[in-house]
Amino acid sequence: MQFNLDEIIKAIDGKVLYESENIDKKALFDISTDTRKIKSGDVYLPLRGENFDGHNFIDKALELGARGYFTQDEFKINKNCDFIIYVKNALVAYLELAKYIRQKINPIVVAITGSCGKTTTKEMLYSVFSTQYKTHKTYLNHNNEIGLCETMFTMPNNTEVLILEMGMRNLGEIELLSNYSNPDIGIISNIGCAHLERLGTLKNIAIAKCEIASNLKSKDEGGLFIGVDCEQIKDNLKYDGKKIFVSLNDAKNIKIKADLTTFDYKGTTYQITQPGEYNIQNAILAIEAGLSRNVEIKNIQKGLLNYRPIEKRWEKTVIKGLTFINDSYNANPESMNAVLKTFLSIYPKPIVLVLGDMGELGKDSISYHKQVGEFLSNYKDIKLLTVGALARHIARNATLESVEFENNSDCAKYILKNIEKNSTILLKASRAMKFEQIIEMVTNYDND
Image 1 (tube, helix red, strand yellow):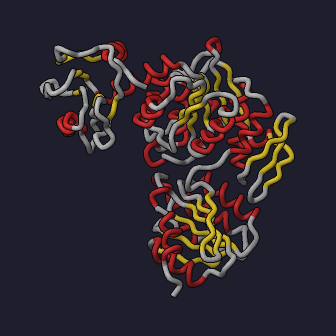
Image 2: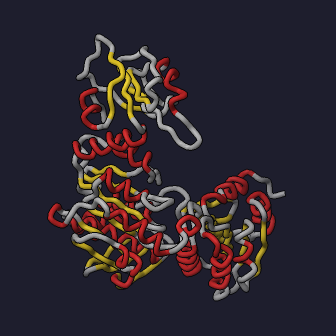
């Protein structure tokens, strides 16, 4: 969205430090936070973080044709532009401008968070709503404050539904996102062990996730909360409006295959082209959101059938006679066990599990990895490969043939030399393990 100077002053708590004599206050311009992408005529907003300071690039932005800039430093004056605006905090100014856009375009805002499954649910929501409404969504998983702003700034003026994914690392972060986006519908996909390292307890995680309702519109305004049937959510949710709680138990006649899952919900049959009971639960959240805004059932069915996951989420690749299922975007105990259960139930042998470290689990990290190994002890005739210091505890607590590796390279070489053709191989780990490297290495290494 483009702004004029009057709109900026109206939207933010700032003051004009400088105006050129010939300034046209009604002229429209884009706002850029990145000099690598800035265009001539844009206005530069220099963000400041722990390890970077965009103020160091103000002169560069002007050289590239910026017509003005914001600054947190009143002494940072370069009059080779049309105007300079002082703000106490550039990120807050960015958020205030994003909120102004949200209010001006005024779409239905659907906000989604959860310990895992939020990106999948976000994509399902988009698939459902876009069958009937002009819909915009968070790109990939850009779910922090800057991602929220980027999403709103790129929202077309005719947007009718805005789907926002909200992530967090600490308490207060989702509350901030909710306060600047004022959702019409708030959704929590689940509460799990992700972020235990920072927040300490499941209760604190639930409190943080329930912050999504801190500025959720009231029932009288058409607000709605949708969440999984979870006591942690119910005990910590502070919202007096309409609430809907769902669970996998609400689905009937479930049939799961490698490329198609079918289930009944409230008397209607739905299909998704992904396996897994956890995907059914995510789909039910999207169904309820769609129904609440009068999306026709036939369109909800169409939307779910058209849903496709983004990269590194059950991504199927065939390389040198081996089939890889890459679900390594992230991992925590809940998502690990859910994916393992699905994979082991739908793929015929020979199958291989390549499991890596699960991050941010706090002081009980080793215990959580041991529990995955114990879970796998219920299965037989499976090859288990682990990568990482934590993942080795999976191997040492599973009664399976296993091999431990310190790095992706050694694991990839082992796969090429020792895994029989026609095997199906699951890759599952936290994002920091960079398991996509294994696929790249298998692709590029010689078998010799």
